[in-house]
Each structure stands twice: as structure tokens, then as C-alpha cells.
Length: 147
Image (cartoon, rainbow, N blue to C red):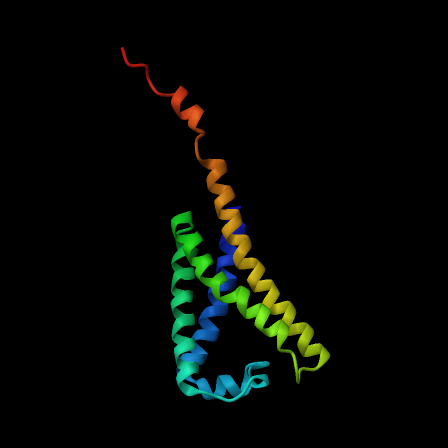
């Protein structure tokens, strides 16, 4: 479980770092060259830079969770990512006008993959914690008796 969490966080961190930095520091080239962004014009430098900054914030949370995979870092970081990624997937799924069949498939698959990965990290981290936490009855049984 730890390997899955760490690899997933690394993928999400790198994705957000690249997209966020590109959008924050070179929004016009992001709009012109990032696949499918030009399907939903017009370009807004203000919006692009704000989105880039917010994305870098999510990348920071994912990076912290990547290096300290305790659930109190992992779950909030993956949740912050998923709060963005799940609606983002559904938005693009409903707005494929102008995309070729190949682009529509690639865009939908990529967005679905990262959205599901974010949710999967949350679930796996919670399951891992529940499995590793001592049961309440076990904890009670191991307490020394008071005389």
C-alpha cells in the first residue's frame, strides 16, 4: 500500500507541478500549446496565472505528502487534488466540441486516470490506517489491570 501511495503521489505531484508552473509563469504559451486548452477560449492571463498558482499550491501539498506519507498529510493533499480533478474530468467530458475523436479519447482517459488516482490514494490511505491501527478491544485487553 505504501508503494502505491508514494508512486501515485509522485505522479500527481509532477502533473500539478508542471501544469501549475507553466500556467503561472508562461500562461500564453500554456494556452497556445497545452493539449486541448484552446478548445475553450478565450484566453485570460489573470485566470491562467491564478489557476497556475492554485495548482502549485496543490502540488506543494502533494509534495509534502509524498515525503511524509502519514495519512494526516496524504488524505488532505489527495482530497485537495480530487476536489479539483473530479469536477474537471466531468467538465471536459461534457465539453468535447471541436475535439477530434482521438483527442476526445485521450483527454477523457487522462482526466479520468488522474481523478481516479486521487480518489484511490484517499481510499488506500484510509484502509492502510484502519488495518494498522490497533483494534479497540485489543487495546483494552492489553492494558494492565488496576489493582
